[in-house]
Length: 255
Image (cartoon, rainbow, N blue to C red; front, side, top):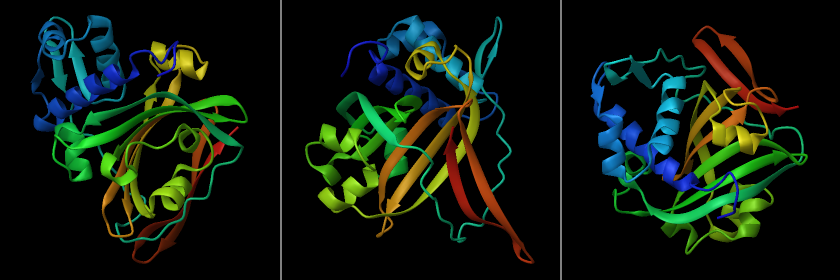
């Protein structure tokens, strides 16, 4: 792990996943344990816990009520831009992309990510936090979770910091990705994210979550990323047909 603002990235990630697990296990309006209880159970400080809670409040997953505590937020309205069987392509985003590894570790999947990757909660994952740059400027923070048995001991720093990750998975680990399900939501950056992305605290951002499958339909990657909202946008081309609305292509623009 590198020094600076990346310190504690993995700890904050595990707190976030624990909270999301509580949210998914409950229903709208269900209470979340108090900050004191969560800090004791997770072995983290209040600032670390509050940073994760603030993020989930900003994205609409939690509701904080003064004097009452935290509660699971109402379910979000979801609109699919394409039917499940619609084909689409994802062109590469503009600019020259590179990465800096903030943290890399082997961790347990846990219940929530284990369900997504169809693994036991005790299964080992390679967790990587990367700062993504475009033409040398910070653009996004990625949190990657990849089953450890797919990549051996670990991906090399060179693979994680240069070129396209999927190209490296294919060429060096025989992992051929084929499709992904991705969600995009508005959010704001935390203090730590702001320092890494070189933007003011609470700046608008995009929270992107993706589950990637290989050619055999096996989950090979779960990733959530925070993209700065002032310099990144996603553009979709939509084809209207008698059978409904089909997204034929999607691309990201960095500017």
